[in-house]
Amino acid sequence: MDTSDITRSYIIETARKYGFQRDTLEKVIRLYQILKDMSGIPLFRDCFALKGGTAINLVCFNLPRLSVDIDLDFTRFGRMPELLPLRKEIKSALFDLLQSRGYTVGKLGKELHTLDQWTFNYRSIAGNNDHIKMELNYGIRNHFLPVVSKEINLDIVPDAGIRFPTLHPCELFTTKINALIERRAVRDLFDVYSLSQSNMLSTLREREMLKKGIVFYQTIGVEGTARKEIDLSGIMDIEPSRIRSQLMPLLPSGKKFFPIDIAKRSTMQYLTSILTLSPREREYMESFSKGIYKPELLFSDPEIIRRITDHPMALWKISRITAAPGLSSRHRQIKRRGRKL
Image 1 (cartoon, rainbow, N blue to C red):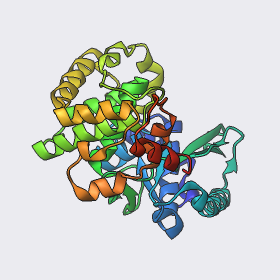
Image 2 (spheres, one colour):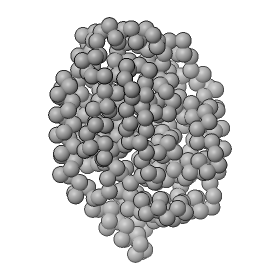
Image 3 (tube, rainbow, N blue to C red):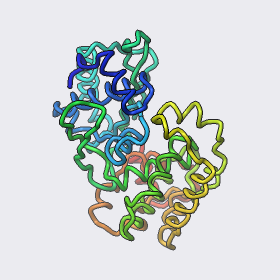
C-alpha cells in the first residue's frame, strides 16, 4: 500500500465496513504507511521502538480503538552529546521522507534536550487540513527488557503487513500503566482495562516483571519529587465526561459504550493485586527518593541491571534531587554522571 492508495472511495468504504470515523481512520492508515516506510530504512529501524497506545492497539489488541500518534523511543546507548550528529541525521531523513510523501512540517513542533516532537500536515480526502503528531524520546533509551520485532497486520489496509521494532510487551504496558497513574486520561484507562480483561501478561513471572517495571518507571519517569509509594487513587477521579471527546471518536460504531465506572474499579483491583511490593522494592523507592540509585534492589537479572545502571533518566533524576549535607561518595558520583547526559 502506498500513500497514493489512500483514495476517497477506499477511505469511505473502509470506514463504513469497520464502523470507524472517516477522518480518524484515514489518519491511522496514513500512520501505518509512515511506519511501513520507516521500517524499510535501517536508520529508523535500528534506532527506534514503537510504544504507547499506537503500539498497544496496532500490535497487541488488533485495533479495538484507533490511535493517532506515533510515539517512538530511541534505543541506542550513548551520552546525549555523542548522539547529536545521529539525531540530526535522523531529523533530516525523517523530514525528507515525510515531505516526499506530500506532508509539510507543522509549526507546533518542539525540540528539547531529550525529546523531539513534530506535526506533519496533510490535506485529508475530505479536503480538511489535518496532521499526524510524531514524538521521538531520546531520554528513555535504556530499556529494562530487550526491544522486540513485532508484526503489524491490519484489516483496514490491503497489504501483507509489516514488522516494526516495539517495546517488549511487559515494558510497553508498564509505561502505559504509569501514564494512566500520572495523567489520568480515559484512553489510558481503556488500554489498561483491556489488558486487565485479557490473558496477556498473566503468568506469575510476567506479573512480577510488570510490577517491577511500574516501580522503575514511577521513579525515573514521574514529574517532580521522586515517589516513595505508588498512588492509584487518581484513577477513580477520571471524569466520564471525557469519554465523548477523548475516546468515542476512536471507537467503532456499535462499540462506543465504555463502562467507565466498571473499568475504573476493575483496573484498580487489577493494579492493586499486582503492586504488592517486597521489602527490597520498597527500599529501592525509598533510596531513590533520597538520591541513591540502586537498581540491584529492584532487579536480580544481571542483564537487566547492566542495561539500566546508566539509565539517562535515572541519573538525571538523581542529579536533581536535593541532597542533604554529607552526600555519600556513590551519590556524588551519580550526580556527576547525571550532568553529562
